[in-house]
Length: 124
Image 1: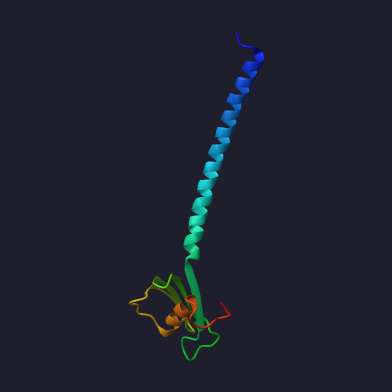
Image 2: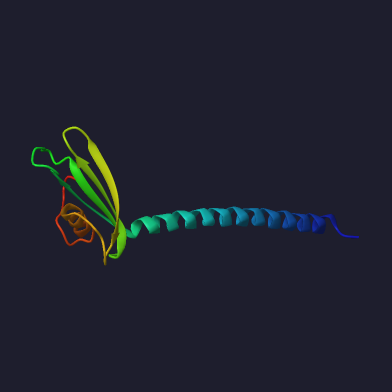
């Protein structure tokens, strides 16, 4: 017959193992959440962002038109352009590919800024 103290120690060890298993499962779940968050941050941090503000037409002022470039590495990305007129605004989204892209001069300037080769625009 086992002594009560031995049974108590065995029970405590079993309970401790269960608690440690629960803690391990919680930590594993938290680690997955952290990994997913870091993966998203890594994707965002791999983009370079640049922009330029300008007057799209001679009869407008205030530099209300702009182009924003989001470039991954130096190969591909997108350019978001807003053209402001006196009556309305237009928003365009164009793909950027280093080898072939149909971009305006302002959009090219935004790409240059994103890649660190162009002008610094303090307004953005």
